[in-house]
Image (cartoon, rainbow, N blue to C red):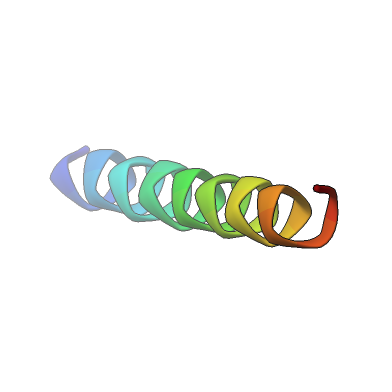
Length: 31
């Protein structure tokens, strides 16, 4: 069970990071 929780936590962190990067890129491109 702990491995599953770790996997979910890492996956959520990765998705959150990608979302933040996407927002930063969009903010940088769109004036």
